[in-house]
Length: 534
Ligand code: G4P
Image (cartoon, rainbow, N blue to C red; front, side):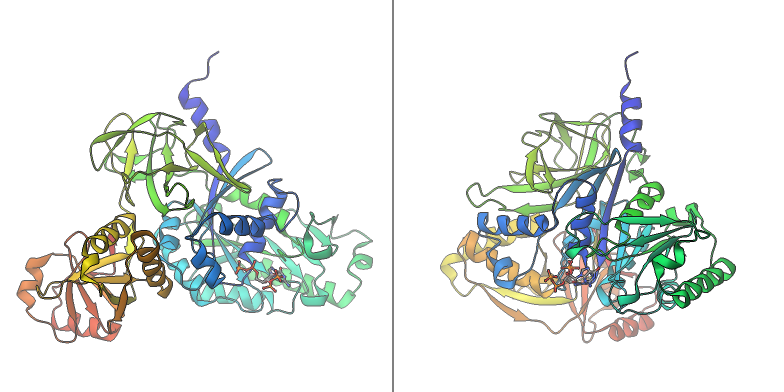
C-alpha cells in the first residue's frame, strides 16, 4: 500500500529530536558536542570538531576575526543519527561576547541542554540563556559536567538549580563520588550502577560495567565502602524528599531531568543521550497566522532564524538557515516567500554535517536547512506552500551596548550606507537612529561587544569602509509598545534618548534599570517592553 505524505511525516517526526546546548564558556560544550557526535558515529575520533574549525578558518577570510580572537563567532547546525533517531544540534556560539544569534538559535530549538561545570554551578551566561528558554517553556535537560574533577556536592548543585532557576529537578542518574573518587553513576530509573573506566582523554567510547544494587561485585568495583554507603544514603534522601519523575512537567519546562558525567572522559554521555532521546520533545507545533500548525501538516513551511554571510570568500555567498516546521522539503522546490509575496526556487540546499557541508535532497520538520540567500531572506521570514501563512516573529532582546557608527570619509558615503543596510537586513546587529534630525549617524545596538567588532571588520573587508565607534552611555533599551502617540503625551524624558529601530518603532534608551523604574513610576500608563518581534 502506498504511504501517504501524512504517514511519512508522522514517521519522520517521531524519529527527530532537535536541541541547543546552553552553557557558560568553558563548561565543556565543545567537548560534549564532540562526544555526542562520537557516540552518534558521525565522527570516529574525538577532536574532529576542532579540526573542522581549523578547516573553516583557512577557507574563509571573514573567519580571520575568529582567528585573531581565537574564538568561534558563528553558530552551525550539526546533524547526526543515534539508534535510528535523527538529531539536530543547533550550536550556539560559546564565547562570552555572544550575539543575538544565540537567542535566535533558541527560537528554532525544541529542547535545550543546560551544561553546567560541577565545580562552578550556575554561571551568568547560562542564567541569561535559561531565561530565553523559559520564555518559550522549552524542556531543559541538565548535564553536570567535569565530575572527574573535584566539584561541588551533587545535592548542593540540585538545590541551586531549584532555588535560583525555579526549576524542579529530577536526577535521572546520580554520581558516585567526584574528582579522583568519581566511580560512575546510579541510574535511578532502571536501578543500575554504571561504573566507568577512565579512557585516555576519551577519544573512544567509554567501556561500561553495569551492576545491580545487590550484585556482590559492587563493592569490589567501587573499592570504597564508605563512598558506596554515602551514595546510597543520598539516594534514599532523594527518593524520600525529591520530586517524582513527571514527563509532562519536563515537556513544559517546569522540571529538569539531571545527569552527571564527564564529557572529557565520556562518563555518562551514553546514558544521557539515551534518556534524552526518550524524554525530549519531538518537533513541536508552531504558532502561525493560521494558528498552531502540527509538523505533520502536509504542506511544507519553515522560517529563517539565522543568516550567515561569506562563509566562503570565493563565492561571497550568504546562507539563510531555515527551520523546517511542517511538510516535507525537497531540493529545487519553488516556495512562496510570505514577506515579499514572491516565489523562490530553493536550489543548492545544504545541510551542515559534522565534517562539512553537503547538499541535501529532502528534509523534515525539526531539521534545519541552509539555503543560498541572494539577498531575499531576512531573519524571521516565513516560506511556505499551500495556504498563505506567517510564523510568529523571532524575539529580539534588549541590547545592552550602544555606539554611534561614524564614517570619517565622506567619499565613502554610498558604501557606508549600503553596508549598514545589508548588515541590518541580515540581522548581524540592531541599528537605530536618533529622532533628532541633525544626528544622521546610525546607532549600533548590541548584546555583546563582539558584535561591534564584527560590524567594523565586515564594513572594512566587504564594503571597504573604515569606521569609528563612539560609545553612548546607555545600557537598557525599551520599546514603547503603544507607539509614537504615547511618547508625545509623555514629553521629553530626562536622562534617556529617544530613537527609532529598523522598523521605525519608538525605543527609549536608558542609563540603567533604575531609570526605567523611575519613568514607569511617573508614567504608569506608558507600556514598555524589553523584547521586540522581528
Ligand atoms: P566550551 O566549549 O564550553 O568553552 O568548553 P570546552 O569543551 O572547550 O572545554 C573547556 C575546557 O574544559 C577544556 O580544557 C576541556 O578539555 C575541559 N573539559 C571539558 N569537559 C571536561 C570534563 O568532563 N572533565 C575535565 N576534567 N575537563 C573537561 P582546556 O584545557 O581549555 O582545553 P584542552 O587542552 O583540554 O583541549
